[in-house]
Image 1 (cartoon, helix red, strand yellow):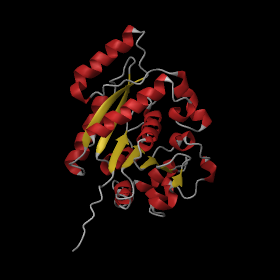
Image 2 (tube, rainbow, N blue to C red):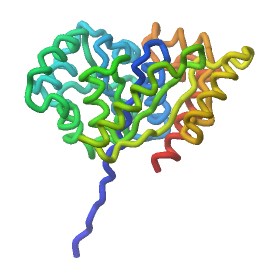
Image 3 (cartoon, rainbow, N blue to C red):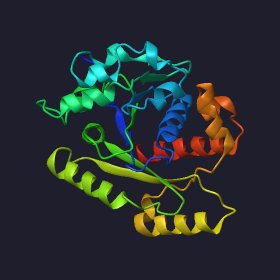
Image 4 (spheres, helix red, strand yellow):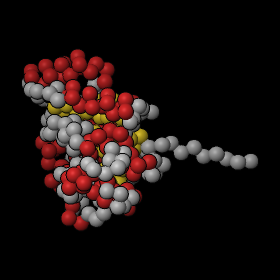
Length: 262
């Protein structure tokens, strides 16, 4: 008698917004932390040449070799780059600013849009969640993230011009779905830097809900000094101050995402 073991494929989530300063990397890092706290094996892929997710886990970018630059250029496999973080179940594929140069090299390379998908396919049964932190632009790297992903997570800052550029991002998502990744889904829209004391935050959140309806997560990420301080200590906010409002919000986000991806 043969016993067939079924291994679930990784759920690949690309955290993206072409607008900078919306809490994209903060969301990728803290979501990954709380998914790992729930004993899911998680890999964070730092696909942003700024490397903020890398430093956000306390890894010195000058010591990264190989990293995502080498993966995208086809020099190294993604497992060769993986660093175990100080947190159980949570690994990181780090990057350096050289990734920006690699993106230029990729523009004239065959298979330039599917480099990340090819790399992630190799580790599909190694992790339960793969969280991709993409650059704050509609770049070749961002398109790679969309093509590799099962889901897009869109952080939107609850401030003036919050929806600026979102239509273009959704158009890009539609093109990627049509041409290269028909199974890509919008996992949800996350309101970040929310300040319930201001009417502007409430008005923007109402506008976001009107636009995206049930795709908006129930939880909002508050403007919180602990969330801002944690990266300078090289840890997620949950490890820095687990009782802070920001930590509690990201913990709740992880629960919502577990439900939406079940």
